[in-house]
Image 1: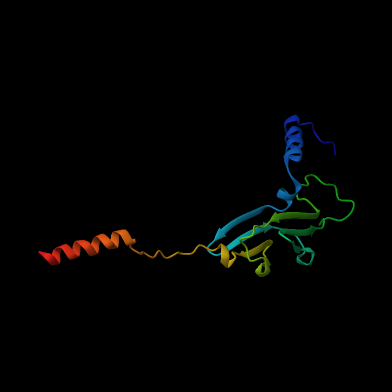
Image 2 (image 1 turned 180 degrees about the horizontal axis):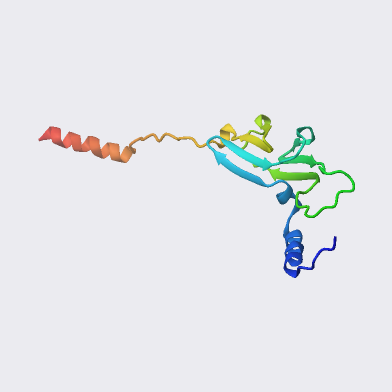
Length: 150
């Protein structure tokens, strides 16, 4: 079957392929902090959970996953927008996280990484003590003495 020429469609496809980065389209990600945890949510629909690999090397967190093609040989593709193959995404973690307590869970096509904030990086209240200066204390005492002599 011959494909009709559509310059707008062809240009759109060319630009979308050129401007698209494989990691961000194959593994779109949300990253946010809620309370004492950072959350990374990576969409991995159609990925076999056994192919998901999460590694931490120093401060670099790497997520790899593989999506296999679903159609058999001899298939005539009309549109193929879902990427297949092995994909990776890297994040550089700051010093304010408890890297030893990272948790990864894959549910309904979404990989959720929970990265706790390190105790040292958590906000804390610092109490303020007040000690009157010696000069001010001396003035208060001498004024008190003046009142006694009246």
